[in-house]
Image 1 (tube, rainbow, N blue to C red):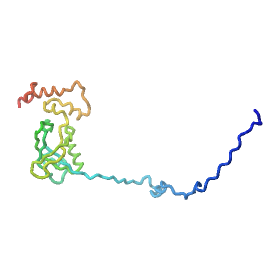
Image 2 (tube, rainbow, N blue to C red):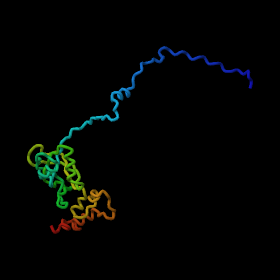
Image 3 (cartoon, rainbow, N blue to C red):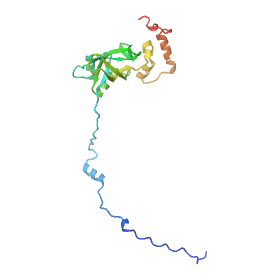
Image 4 (spheres, helix red, strand yellow):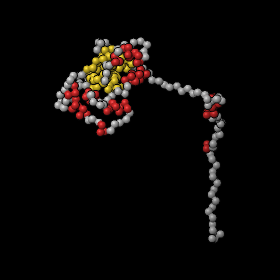
Length: 218
């Protein structure tokens, strides 16, 4: 290599920064974390922290009852009330009652079908839980339109009731209710054990669409 080859010129020095670009040294500030840690005291690990929880105001809701809960003494016991509850006579439309053993069960009915009972204004979520616990998994919470029959205001409003949670067709036919069994036991039965709804209705109507069949002795 030719040692006499010309090398590139040395670059000029960088310009001095302008005064406006100079870094201003600021006064050091203490760490916010260290400030809070010092305020917590030496036993901060065992110090209980209280976190306030914002609670929503509970809005009372009316419930429609048609069975044992229409009796004030039973409702008082279930809800652990100090005084006997005041119930209003009411009805709901589009439903009908069937029998589940010795208990009544609310199921869907023909349009215009009425079920009479009583309504009660539930005041707390705890009371709603107690009602659901009393009704067991055999019943499910269902929204409904409650019409009062005592002539007082309000005459009508939205509320809740408990409907039969199983297969209404099997309940009416008096056959094994697979749906309710699975809900109560928490497991599923083989499909071959399932009775089709059409077959249940055929047994219910006696196979010819009439009102006899399983209920012909009634």
